[in-house]
Length: 167
Image (cartoon, rainbow, N blue to C red; front, side, top):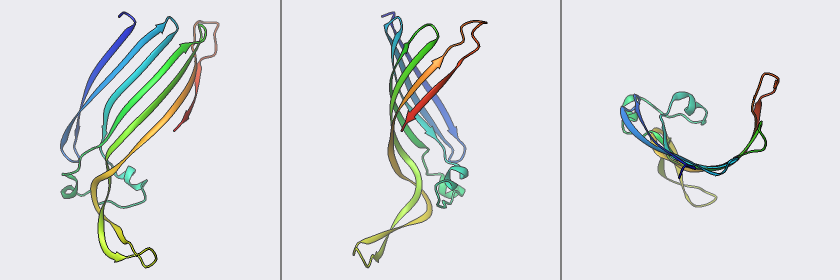
């Protein structure tokens, strides 16, 4: 059991925009497969509040006046991460890590069903309003490869890392 490390954690956030507290549980673990190879995993809830800068990047307007934001929840992501790292020699460390993120309660303009019928398709159309709502959701997946060079002494002048991510 000396080869297993478990690290639970909790984070509390208070969002002044909507005056809400959030509890974010988190969990990390590492298991040494041998002296140079470690299997790692992580899971956790991550919350973030919305701000005007992020909303401008989304190419639509949302009214964030006080009366419209008090009922909003912070945007939530649940992270699942699994990786392995291995020392290639006494200076070089290689890592591969995959992740999945489940995204919920994303802020988006409230969809409004209209009675307009599209003349080409014959379907009812949806319009958006400026009223914010927690109607967005989605996911993100990816993998990262990292090669790190450690600085191990005064005669060793090179250190750093290079990484490639595919998301």
